[in-house]
Length: 459
Image (tube, rainbow, N blue to C red):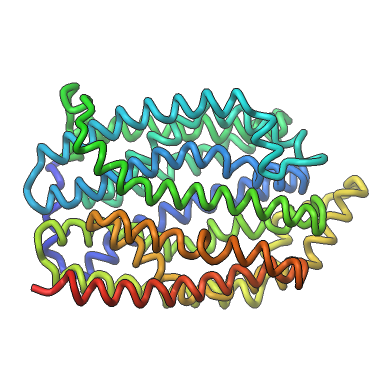
């Protein structure tokens, strides 16, 4: 097979290039999100609604450690895209080697710490009452596989930074298909419960990890490294850490938000209200897949052309990405606005003989989900702008504005709102906090991004 190069990032028309990069990225995000969605449906129907709540409690903890791999991946990918744009292949290889070493060391260390404080972390993230017994076995098994999950996330992002989205898409499809297959075997056939769901997840990411090793060792990648590239270099580490800290901070903020929300919602409505948010959380990962796909497709385009000093192409990529993502975000919102109950019912078991408490939880979820879903997704048509704004500054290597814009929605706006509004409006205060925070973050990002484009992208 002939070697594929990254040169088309700087030559193809932006609209065509963005579609070519974004469709595989969107499909990858869709399949991965469907994996989480269907996994939750399987768990909800075969184990129960408390199992969905348990997964909602555990995933932010484990994914935070896995997000270390994503952070290292994004930080290094920005360097790699710009290095390839400037014809500095050796720098790109050295960066990738440093990413591998850093990911292995950091995630194994964090996994050890996470397993040492299992009970404390589960309780802190809202795994209280009956939820705890479901969450612990899932947490323990998944944490064993966190290093493979982190390496998979890191490698996936690096492949995309080379301008090879199809391989990145396959790397995301593999764990999704294998996870659903193993879910059926481990949960439905073998009746392993939450441990079965956890082993399905862990094994699936290990399989994807093996696929990525194959890709990077073949001529499909320009980043065929040797052992010398694995030696840590201080300047590269500093840049990876600086840019990667944006992604890490974003995931840390997501985990913090879940921690806060689960505790607030538990106080307002117990396990049932936590289950409502668990379903909404799954939809936040699934429904926005086309918007996230465009953001992922946009990153290497902006980074490569910025490194090549093709600033007109950088500006065009920003405007095109925002336009496409806004249209798709609007379509997503309309679907969820008109069919929230139908979506929620997919997660709930309708089989005969359910325990009385689970029947009560199902009824509560269906009663409360419509209002919650509509408010949480109310600003979806405009979230493209803050997403692309943060992605742009990461792509061009400007960590500080990327960090500030990334944290603005959840850190500067949402968390203060969700502490204040429920005091006055109860449960409704929680859901409206999402929409208000999205609007405020969009206004701030629009002003700052417009200022930086005028100042930084003038030839």
